[in-house]
Image (cartoon, rainbow, N blue to C red; front, top):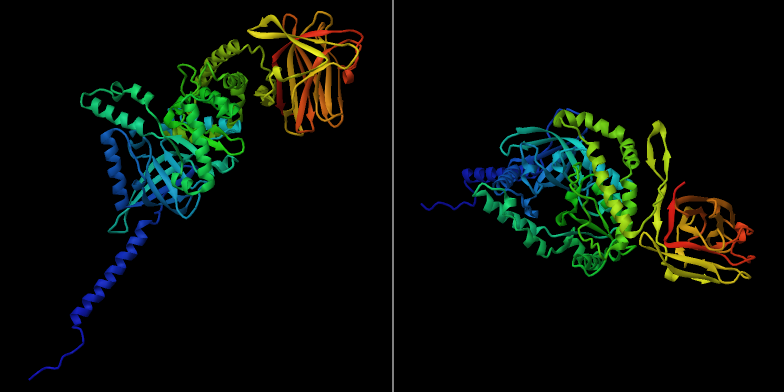
Length: 620
């Protein structure tokens, strides 16, 4: 008998199918959950911010494998594919993130306190940062508070630097096959910002590109040297071919390269800034044509104060292209701070024969930063915060967080370099006043910025004669400035100098009495009648008269004996305009300060050092 066919599936087949579907759904669900495991409970030990990294087992094994490879070769080489998913918990709030090992040398991978680079997902931030690193505080120097204070000092001078702080850390590994965790209490970390648009935002800088030199050439030579030395038991440094590295071409790259190339504005900035950096790198241009020399000089001075010379190596240089000034600015990074200097360390691309503009600015920066009062003021300002940090950090690291003695030693070396620059460029005096504050602590004064003054060749002589003498002072030319005609107004004037309205400005110049008289007039002139004036008695070293006109305010004048017969004559006032001219010339005892340049009863003259003319913005 023929049986009827049935379209019904056997029961056993249906059961297997249901089981497989449930299993697949379960596995899929587990994969989604375990990619970013929940942070387990953890007992915090300190009052610091708490950061926890939770990996699934698979991700952590990839991290472990990368660490072992680095320990075997002696350096850590990283790429984007090294990132693994992880959950970052900050003070109890969970964030999805990508995490990899961080650091070039294996000191970042010792023990259980490994260094990590973190990128938060979904545009989330922690303390305003989407990308940051955490590392053993002493990978930035044995004196673990020095790097923190170095970056504070940089930002105190309104230079570009990274956010840097300390926190407590823990690592958790979630088992793939159970709900169990392996947890590691790894102690205290330093947290350091990395480079992206938020770095610029935190420094109040306009969005633009950040440049670096490729590290490939350097690390390729290091790898070869380690390989050669390790087989013989020698240090890699004994085999390092530094001449190859020095002659090598280091390509210039932007951070966030892909995004930069795809953004027409950022790509334009990159092409411009790369051209600038390349030109100074190969020696075709001077530093002042490429960099904001005031900022570069100040950053170099602070870097030497902290012995942070590790930040001067080519692979550690970071630069911001300022689209407003079309100049590059340094970003302080990886100083390995707190050590004593062996010698003063200049910016890598300085050419002492060509870069006089930059080196003169460096002299002004060194005058400020090498002053013992500057260091005392800096220590005083951050004393309470640093003592609070050290109270916790010293429990794990035992040693002092900062050696002030090392910084004082560095200031001695800086002062030696300062004297060398002063002698070379004939800088007789740099006026940096000081003000007392509570408890007898002295802080650095009020000089904010030195304004570039047009060269004497561009000054305009109105019925005056400015003639170079055969005499010099510290290798600087001395000029005689005389009236050509006593019966009419006579003065010498600079071209316009750009200033900030509503600020106090001070101008000063070295002057000596002439052959026929001993009075000197000085004016800071805006649009008539806005001005401040003073007349100086060069015979007796006195300010004879001073006055102001129009909407300028707060006139003040001083005279200071510098050497035999030479006086530093200074005039300041609150300037209510965006452009000024400096007017100067000889005058006589009979003239008032308001019209010292007017008709006199006789011809007269003075000697001046045009190269000493300074205009400075100061705060009051």
